[in-house]
Length: 422
RNA sequence: GGAGGCUUCGCCUAGUUCGGUCUAUGGCGCCGCACUGCUAAUGCGGUUGGGGCUCACCGCCCCUCCCGGGUUCGAAUCCCGGAGCCUCCGCCA
Image 1: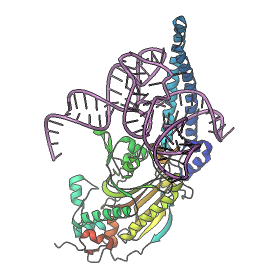
Image 2 (image 1 turned 90 degrees about the vertical axis):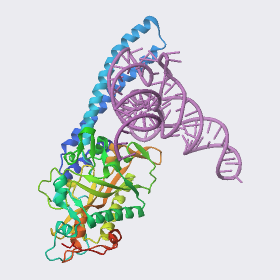
Image 3 (image 1 turned 60 degrees about the horizontal axis):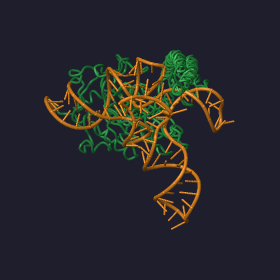
Image 4 (image 1 turned 135 degrees about the vertical axis):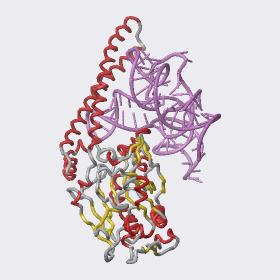
């Protein structure tokens, strides 16, 4: 949710943000009207209620006929209070509905436009020259690392088994990510992957992305699409100790589940787009004024991980129209995928400013001791999808795959994965 | 799954019998002031959170005693429903 005070003071800022996203500007005026309506309804209720309380206090001191008269008067007032309360509650609910629908205010400097209007910030590493590169599915089969067929047999399309070196590769990748996070002071966390509706809504995933989310009807729980959800909700309704310059940083490890409802026919081959994968996610709570710098730090840590797995990539500044509802700014790292001859997203870091924390009521005390809304940020440190880039970029002509130095300890010290015989 | 107990201001706690200045007592913690060579100790004062009016401050008002309903002129207190935690029993790991 955006800050309503900011909206009142500077509605044009919000309009400009909506324009940059290519989203509705009229919703800004709807929100302003709903805010106004709520406040006037509240004032009407409060005036009546104040009168009622005052009369109620007199009740103690009077007796007899005088009391009977007073009761008659307050009885009437009670009905009015009740009605005014109902109106105020309705106005509150109406405001909330619109409030939830308004996405975060885009950070200044984010490229305007849609999905294709991203700005390439830099390209890092050298693309390997491979003649007739095998794709990760073929390599995964040769190495006995990925079993797509049995994944489909057991669970359906977009499921897979990681086996042998594939399983080790994923575990190694995630452990490497965890190790790096811990080195930089993150608290490692293994999160629940089933969460209550409040957590899912609080992180902003039940808006436009609702159809992407698995829901367990019988238990009213949701399967998370990223550990961002449980991590953001971890401190919900809390007032944190958050001294300046000392953000709280968590590294969450979890399986992630996505329905991929809108992706029919897209990336159907391999493990690029799947219903279940594993991920290590960085998550920061900090003061709003520190969020911008923290965002760049998260990006730098992502790039450090990509350097460790020795994969060429580029960094893009995602356009406003392609940001999630919660994000004010987003940077993606895209790894080179030789079989496709293009870059594919492997990390994404978002600055959600106070948008998520406002919904989840995550606060800290400022210098005056007043509670203030914290800022939240997140960024990917490793996911199953990275295996695609690692296998393809490090493949050799005989179908073997060189293991990046940083991952070798996790693969029994092997520096190359050989195709299975037979 | 069955039975019982509990849930109050950051933490602990009083208040609920018998409804009325109860946002609510006391302690701890924290903040300010005083005292002290410093620290400690002591004394005095302040300290739930949210919202609205005013918005520069002061100030005023409303909501908030786990949540949602109800009874009542009036609910922390009475009634109904729900959630969470704890204990015991059963069941499964």
